[in-house]
Length: 107
Length: 122
Image: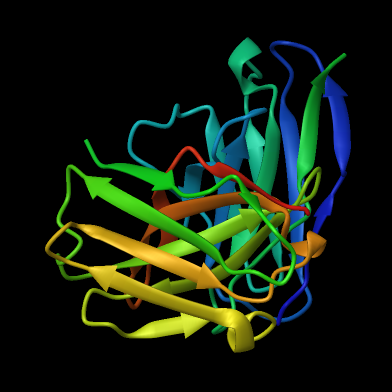
């Protein structure tokens, strides 16, 4: 399987901040990379698929970029409802794997 | 609106079988282009993909669970199920079902159930 490494594991930010989360794959996953948001006690929610495509209904302040082994999720202007944990996921290999998550907390 | 709902016992004894069902509404489980997955989240930890099933019965199982895992689908009731045998405390987790998009260029979990906590304990 392909381990996915997210950084940072947590960050503190304020409303209005620009937030960037990085996800690295141990080998090339092309653009088979998704981002999910999870709030406490809730299921993950798909934000970005295929590295850069915004899922229907997701605010445009979320964006994704990257290819091969390095990817980023950017929140252009953090909103109160964006405090959550974010996971990347590769779906390139037969066994799909997730990163360990990045928790975005209130500064 | 596609909705998924997990159901099953919240407590399972060690060495017994964990059985869960996911009922789908708002979409037909027999529609092409979609697979149906189980994912789990161990307490305070990340996400682990358990595997998927297609309405035709085709499956993929996570190799780490394959020897203990069986998935099935019931198209007449628009639901799919998971059985995990010989459970231990390490199988204690929140179990999610999810609709799985699987095409040449797009592969993701676009709709999720709310999740159900399964505790393995005597």
